[in-house]
Image (cartoon, rainbow, N blue to C red):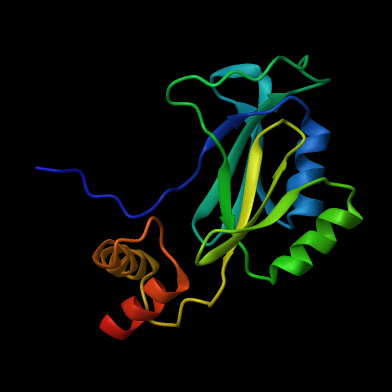
Length: 173
């Protein structure tokens, strides 16, 4: 028997500053702040919930007042490498917005069938904004498309998914 799931509701992250976190996610990334309440497990913190898309959220736990001291970044088993968000605007528009807010980023990076930009939020979390080079057609499940493209990539002996794999997958679907 397995547990059935239907998507990721939210990652829960620890932030260092209340004001910076709200500004970044609402003003730079344009997300709606849908919940702000005390952290039920630690009353010295505030629980923020940003809506990233329908039924998709990013939770942050930040200090009620002031900032946590900056600490060296360490990777630990089970830690998050980055948070990837799908773009609903052209990547150039996202880059222009980051430029306007003085946010430094890396990219765009061509990932074969996707393009991405990477930057840090005010808490040090790495954010990836990505878009498919050719948009996924309406009515096609993105997971099914990736599975079919992966199968084609393996058939051709490629190292990673390319546009040709996506095109072949779309023909199969």
